[in-house]
Structure formats: C-alpha cells, structure tokens
Amino acid sequence: MDLAALILAVLALLAAMSARKRAADLEDKLVALRAEAGSSRQTVDEFDGKFAVQQKFIEALARGDDVDHLMVREGRLYQHLDGKALQAKVEAGSAYVIDVRTAQEWSTGHIPGAAHIPVDELEKRLNEIKRDGTPMHFVCAGGGRSETAAKLVADRGYRHVFNVTGGMQGYRGPTVRD
Image 1 (cartoon, rainbow, N blue to C red):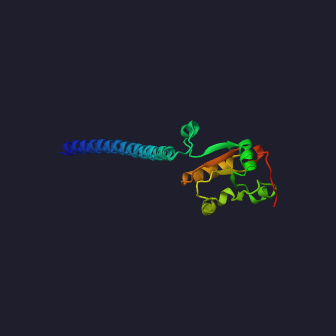
Image 2 (cartoon, rainbow, N blue to C red):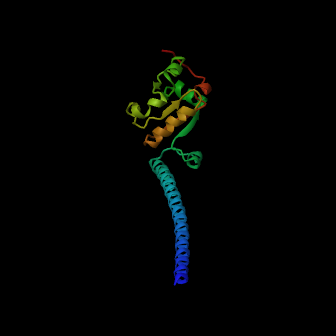
Image 3 (cartoon, helix red, strand yellow):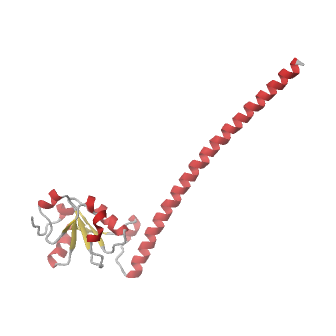
C-alpha cells in the first residue's frame, strides 16, 4: 500500500508541476497580449490624431485657406515665412506679429507694433490673440519657440498662422526698444 501511495503522490506532484508550467505560460501570454493591446491603443490614438489633422486640412481647403504641400506632408496647420518676407509685410503695414521671446530678449529690440507674449505664457494668454482671421506671425530669436507657439495656436483652431523661420536673427527690418 505504501508503494501505491508513493506512486499517487508522485503523479500528483507531476500533475501540479505541469499545471504550474501551464499557468506560467498562460501568464506570459497574458502579459504579451496586454502589451500588444497597449501598442494597439497607441496606434489607434496616433491614427486618430493624424485623422484629426487631415480633417482640419480639408476644412481649411474648403474655407479657401492657403495649404501647401509641405504643410500636409509634415502634418502642420501653420505656414513658414522667412525674415525677408516678414520684413516686406511689416514695411507694408500688413503684419500682425506676436513676439514670443523673453522680456529680456524683447527689451533688446522688437518689431514695431508687435505683441509680446512669451511662449511660456502663451496658453494662458490665448484670449489676447486676434481671432478675426488676420494672419499672425510668430517670431522668437531663432525660430524654434515661435514654431512651438505657431503649432499651439494652430492646433487650437486659429487660422492664417505663420512661423517666422530664422526668427529675429533672420529679420532685417525696423526694430524699436521700449
């Protein structure tokens, strides 16, 4: 009888070890499925974001807004403008400029008539930006912060948004100091 009990105990142990191995394998599969589901969710979110941008492009085209092929390719809702083109607009009196540099940078010289809203204050001061369809030109020292500002404003539904590439370094027009 002792031999029978020992055989049953060994079989029970083997069955338990087999069940534990299957449980570990199932747990590994579950972890992999959860990771895949997270990746799928991220993919869906990315698709939704890109779809929303494309929808905004279609809306802009339907309104008759200028949308160039680079905007579509790069997925941005704002245009680029260099310092020379901005200078022509400033000299013609047709530029609404928003300078997003720091107060210290602003004090070294800025475009006459420009609004001053540092980029780190922009989101909480959006109500200060004209929403009447007037083209707006964001400028900083070199073009990086102004691109961040242009993206933020365009993503919030503002139209006719321009980033001044090269910033004040590329702008050779008139400036004033306060």
